[in-house]
Length: 231
Image (cartoon, rainbow, N blue to C red; front, top):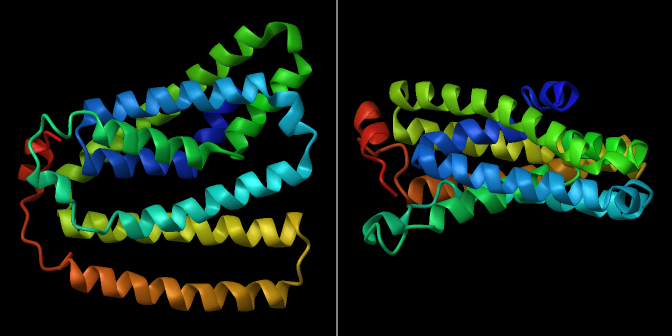
């Protein structure tokens, strides 16, 4: 539990937890994250030996996870149409959003890889490995929830959305950089060129979405936004 908890500290999924708490009701974020942790760590234990010895599979998993960060960064800026729908119709929607996003982000992450390593090393103690990794993830992300609640009460909604988007996109680019350099062994200059071109496209989309959804112009109360989130 200690190793996984330390690996998760300041990790992208912990930061993702902080972001989700500023967007959705805390109870739904917690449920979504718990479900995602169970799925991701259970998968790591069950398929540890397969994924751990298949480098090509690991590369594609990490590429998918990195691309998903860029997608979620842009998607988070879109106007939430579900806020106009009754809470009954949106009862489980945000739990699923949190669960899916967290699960994808955890694929190929160092915390999941740590669990895979432990499951390979201790194949006869798979339940202990699962419980240890689960506990470590819960401890680290509980801290993320607390910090997220504090941020939610002191930062306006529009600012939170922009910071969240930039954070997600930055993590996506950082992960892609490391994958291309350390795993695909692509020349540094080529990698920088590819990422610069991608950055121009993503920044253009970011500016368009911010303007189209009037993110900066929204006049939402900081405390009110946190207190009345019921979706």
